[in-house]
Image 1 (tube, rainbow, N blue to C red):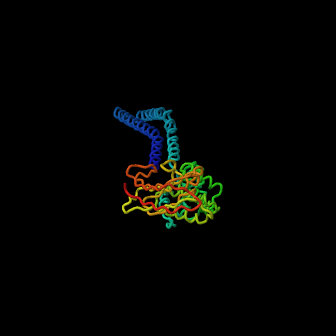
Image 2 (cartoon, helix red, strand yellow):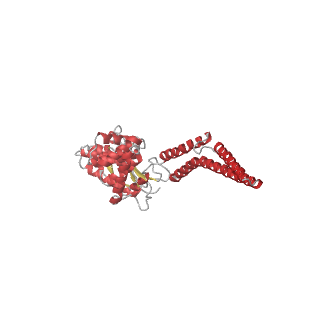
Image 3 (spheres, rainbow, N blue to C red):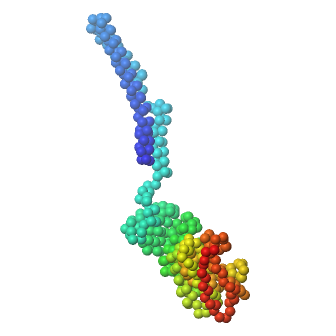
Length: 383
């Protein structure tokens, strides 16, 4: 489209240049033709009036001199331009320059090489040839356009799917430096660094995790990274608390199963587990899978919970452990309660506060002592 506009402007400029020259040439040609015709008519009149050869020769010479003098006087110099013609020539020079300037402003040479690069996001990691092709093209593009944060972001995904984690981290870092604290960019930057460093979080990675959790306190992927890092540092209580937060933050049954299994495995590494109670949750057939189950340890009769485990109803039957590691806050631990009760609620609305139509089971009053409490078997029934 812009090429067509450039051609049109070029032709228009040529027309501006040619028009005054064409007008001058046509004017000169018409004047010469008129003078020749007038000279021929006068010669014919003279020849018709006399037969004197000497007189005719003198008249021919006189008429030729008059014709020559009039041509010299009337003919405009072919290369002399009028003021209006000069303006047309100036316009003829300016218009192509304007066309070139317009083209350079609205077009980006080479942009076609990365058109369709969004395909990187949906490409499979097995499409190595396609990913490598986009990686080469995007690398060349950002080398010439280092402020294009979207291309840096796509290049990071290409590297990430090619298992080039160090390069991916650098690409996402460049995108973040341009776009600012975009949560999507920060998340993939953190993942690239996490994979590059083989699961170890350094100060930069921890800073990225803090920024993400400041916006979304229960970001499952980030919580999982922090939990694994705590496990490697043998801070098992911190790891379990983070896994509990991740478990309560996702509705994906597969992820919930993974987090629940991880919690049990990490618990096995604690020499002296905190006192608590285990609850086995079951329900008859027909449990609505889109509902949510809350296992709550709270003051007898109600109040702010001490500990909560949240699972999707599709996970029933399952087992949950309520103790200080599942507490809502370190300032409100289950071990500090003189007495408590356990409430298991199936919520259709997905909220912990009781609603009409919820399924609910409640225990008797419980007290943590020196010995382990027996396992509670909570069976959920429709109201």
